[in-house]
Length: 144
Ligand SMILES: [Zn+2]
Image (cartoon, rainbow, N blue to C red; front, top):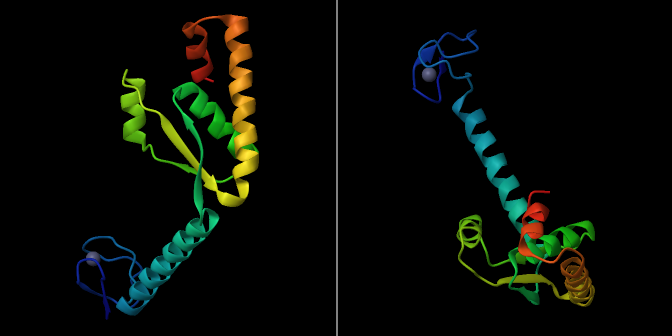
């Protein structure tokens, strides 16, 4: 007998799927093993992410949503890991008309280059404003 780990039904030994609920039949031991492995992987991943930014320092406070997105792209392109204090929901509020400065944090060892990159973004934005003059053009930028 194989006992379904989902519904508990006792299936035939040669059955591959539970005849009641259709779940793939595994022994409880295999299922628990699988769960354990998944948990271990998640723990490992969390540990890696914690390592990536182990000492977050504030690189820039960006009060322009577009500039913040550009800056994040620049950081990604430069392989600089960063974190910020906005979640997706907060971004929605920002795009919906609210206004929040975003704080971008990077690893302490990346601080100098991150700040330099921010200068570049700010300078590029100023050129951008000179060239195109106006907020409508920024909206096109967003959709990129
Ligand atoms: Zn079942």
